[in-house]
Image (cartoon, rainbow, N blue to C red; front, side, top):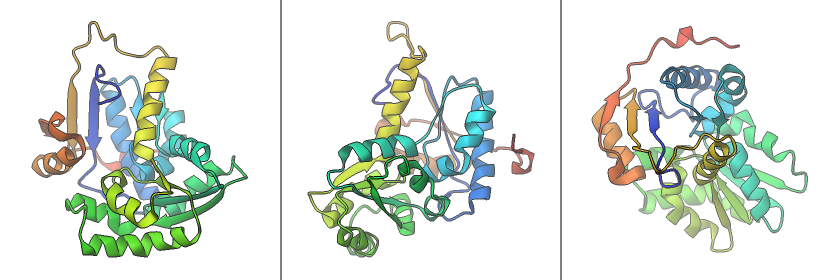
Length: 252
């Protein structure tokens, strides 16, 4: 919304079945493809998979399945981290699903000078969705997850879940001021801008009257409360999306 203020946006949050991070990759794939199918049916000009777990599960399928550009969060964050590191020691914090997929290991394989340390942080999403961004319980969890990365000497840390930027304060505190934090969410947004510009798909600012639609598979009221922590007052109304049977989603 900040980088592309003139663009129409349809956002679909699968809150009825989240978090994806603790689910098997095959299950995440089914749910994510169902959501993407619905968005494509709405006539979108580009797809953004704004979830690391979903990106790890469906990126290859999505790029073969749809005729519109598909932008995800893993490769943009990887590129930024490689550019930012001074020592070649990079850490990634993510969900269990993303960690088990080894999607970041595959992405960083193109940079052999990098020593990668990956840490699953399953409780971080729970804290964010409860609106907890500080306090002793969160700090204790942060030390549990992040202290091994501090001992490993990482100088760059990828926030490999789009919930984690809301915990930047505690993450930065535990990691220390000399560690560069890379937000996969922010790098994804930059990649969306780049993709639209390179393909001539940008909306004309002179004639644009952008609309933002928010859909959820869960309860609209709960989604709006959580969503405003991320987006602020831009999130005004939320519509419930019932979705179809995931059994109808088949691989290409």
